[in-house]
Length: 93
Image (cartoon, rainbow, N blue to C red; front, side, top):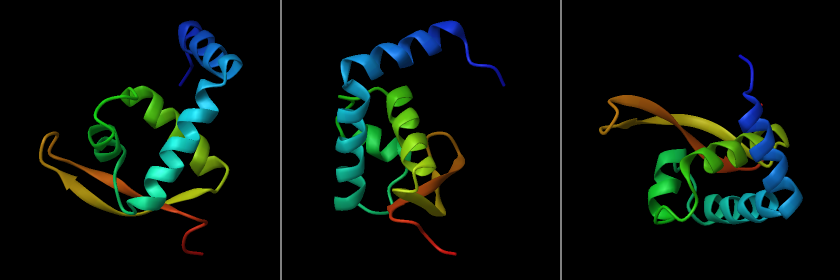
């Protein structure tokens, strides 16, 4: 899957402005205080102050850096799909 040029430009822009690291820290702290939430639940509980795309992007970065891990899943009645639960740390081996 390719990344659109607009997505690349937006990513570079938020990195340069320091927004991504601030959002990442905010999301990491939120997961620390509320383990087991899904990305959607984080979005809703942050009162939509960080857009869903940013949450997914920052969670992906946190997963890649092994600061958070996914374990188990929950059913999302709104989408009728399962979503992975997020926890701080390396996770099960």
